[in-house]
Length: 217
Length: 217
DNA sequence: AAGTGGTCTAGACCACACC
DNA sequence: GTGTGGTCTAGACCACTTC
Image (cartoon, rainbow over all chains, first blue to last red; front, side, top):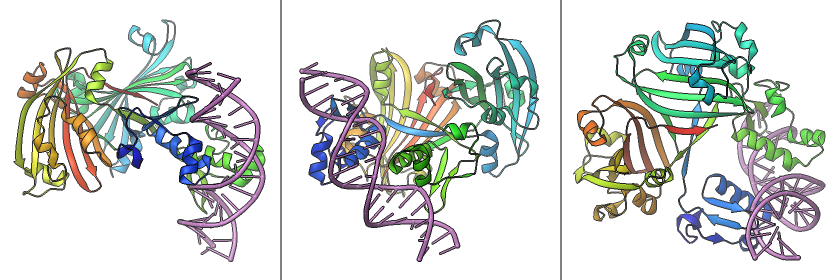
């Protein structure tokens, strides 16, 4: 790490092999391997068999972002959590989702709208679609006592997910639900999760104005 | 991992020690150690010396988010990058920043406003404050040929940083610069970086409407 | 074919946290 | 004290990629 930041090893440059470094530092090759592997995970090095190890030219800083369970996020702020189901309906997959969730028009989805409150004030509006082909048990749940997020964590573990963060102007109906003005800037999280190649759920989270998603490097 | 997801080992439960698992799986303890260490890094396990290893009760999913260099982000979309300096001035630290950057009123900051374009269209508006106590060389730079982001990556490596994502309504002047309407929802990234305990720079990035910051789990 | 990193083994000592 | 995970060593074989 010191040699990278002091540019003794410049960006793009091939650094010595593990055996050579082990000799130089007077340690075992496994120790060098672990050090280099961790630097590679952090994005400072690029490693290829036979090709050797290179210093990354433009190290992309990586921030790890926690994807919290909303109830815990609210409770950690010292607020009282509650949620309300605003709508619950089973429908055939709408056009807009067939592509992003790998569905056809015959697939049935559970469409759920819920509001999550912190100390009685609107905190986040959730618009969720659950794939009933993948998670048939969801059709028997009313999600009153346990919210959909936590139910899915328990009952439909996912293997991968796509996440996108963006900003949107509150629509008239969103503004009413979130107790803000139409047009207010709303922080949006879109997330689709998968088990292998089968979509589980696709959700749009609209946070009340002023919300910040924080992290650190 | 299988035993966690199938709940053979339930949340909060103490799992067998490394020696016992090595015997059961017929492998070396170092192999068990690496497996458990990686599961702990991913957030599924909590490990403590003498205390043993427990399954995390509410596993917090972690997403890794790339913090790209804006020029490369634009070029990777196949667009032509250019940037313009809109304002450049050296001032004493304003009240609003003294707290978040650990400054007093005698500290001088370089205040920089720049617009980053993709194929000639506004992409992102950058409002940056550079701490000249920590990075005195910045006062000699005009940032015309190399933008502040990349100059700082080269000349002032940081050890830690705070990041916050949010949404804001475009002000009248922001709307004019970003070629959008006043009030449009704008995706905001606020970032302050540090070298040890000295602040380097604090920056607010306002992306043109429609921008999404994507990642996956 | 050959050289690099990826992974594993069997053993050892240590640091920490709990008793 | 004592038991747990944290780390290291010396050696081995393998997988991948380039030549």
